[in-house]
Image (tube, rainbow, N blue to C red; front, side, top):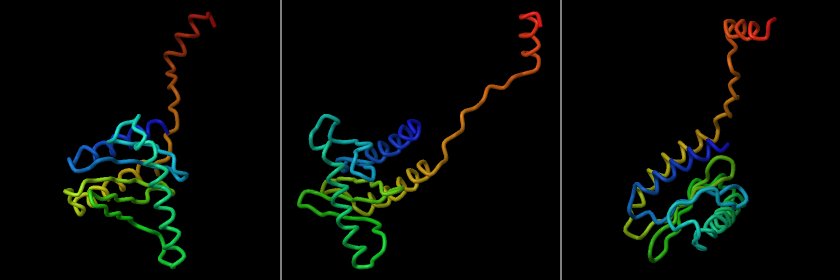
Length: 150
């Protein structure tokens, strides 16, 4: 799983770095735990609460949509006076949240986000690789047996 998180972090960091108008990118698990963040800084209290807040907002709106029989939510867009936040579902009840300033191009960020979601979902759906067993070569085995006088 550690390898997957490193790979996902790289993909999300690439999204964050791709546009000067992106303020932060966060990946949150199904209970609101912040798994990845880029932007505000790891020790910034604002960054620490981005995960639980994004999860609560998304979950509440998703519940509202389900009660109205609208099926699964694809994207939640929040518009503020100084910018936007896009929240997308990802994998099994995880979410990716992107905050951007008001000068950002929502359409372009949505396009980039959809490509990132494809990559992240693909990474998370991959089955873990089985540990490789060392190959025992017959010649090496014979050498070992000679050493122990077998």
